[in-house]
Image (tube, rainbow, N blue to C red; front, side, top):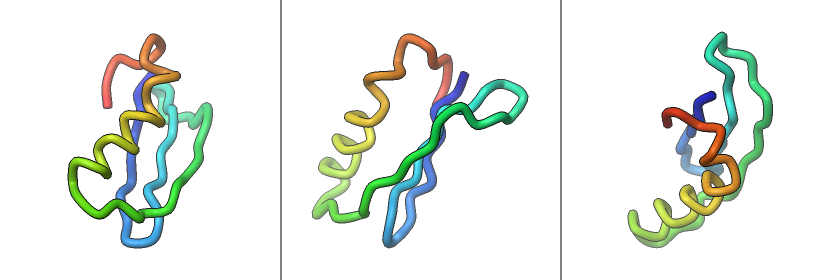
Length: 57
């Protein structure tokens, strides 16, 4: 499984994707971070619950 992100101006979309491209889960959150560090922290927060199943980002 892979964890994928799409960072946009309005939303950061993310998904848990199988090796064959099938999406197991997807969600999004608003792009409201004031700094790169804050954005990365938000992205990590979404990733942590799935880290055991993920072999790449």
